[in-house]
Length: 392
Image (tube, rainbow, N blue to C red):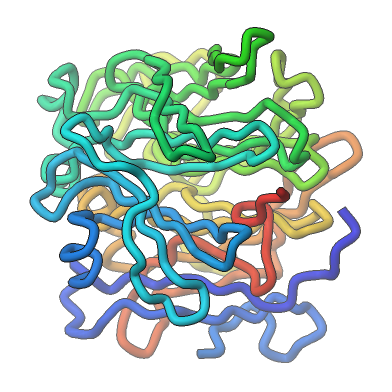
């Protein structure tokens, strides 16, 4: 927790589906408060053929000079995921890490812990269905993922799957950073839950739900009850705090996970979402809030969408947030976001007792990009961060 302060953040910006005839691009954002450019933007075919994979999602560096990227499915949009291995210097596609079979599970996210000889992957679902948008009729049909898949890190074989329940969509996954730890967290993206997974005394892995964000009874939405659709989660480098973004309800939450079996909510802040006052959604029954949150405005800019991707400073004091999920879903849930472009927000973190507060002096408005409004997604620091570093 004593690493150097971050000075720049790399952020992919999405133009696909916006009508702008230009490719997606990588923005470099200045996050040094001493800089005059503070909070400003400074500036598949081979995989198909060699690996029969597509819909690439998450990347991690391996300890052997290679990069591994998981794929959500195959080039035909079926839910047969896998893992692509690249040379870290040349980015040549070297092949697949896993051993493809007819039973290859759908892809999602993944994290590995070499000292326990394990990699755990998650499942989003069948790409050819969810890539066109969220259809409530797909619920209960097996289109969405439901398993944590346990792989032998040495043999690359799948040897255990844990069923998390129908339509749970366990996607974003994190082990604790301590390489000796056999504990981690994964979000049930469509059911608003956080699942704690751990190694048992007999060497197998188990999982149990430790957080459940209640659904809200609503009118004016796709369904009569609005779940917390979770966009991302991360764990601070000291393994004390868990942060999770709630794409639909609009809040970012901070949990103390000193005891991973019993997390405690210690911080919360709302950054827009679907239940703000004056919108098309009316909350009829809410187990958590007494009233609907106010619209989120910062530096005179009305922010649309809900919080999605998260990145934490190495000292744990600053949490960065972007608010775009996936183009077809963005268009469906938040058409204003696509029209106006996304933002990047900084949240000040109380690392002693817990607590979150928006930094009103920091705003990156991707609606003002030269090529037109863009949608910022994942954020990474040069040299490593909370979401990419794995200690071996």
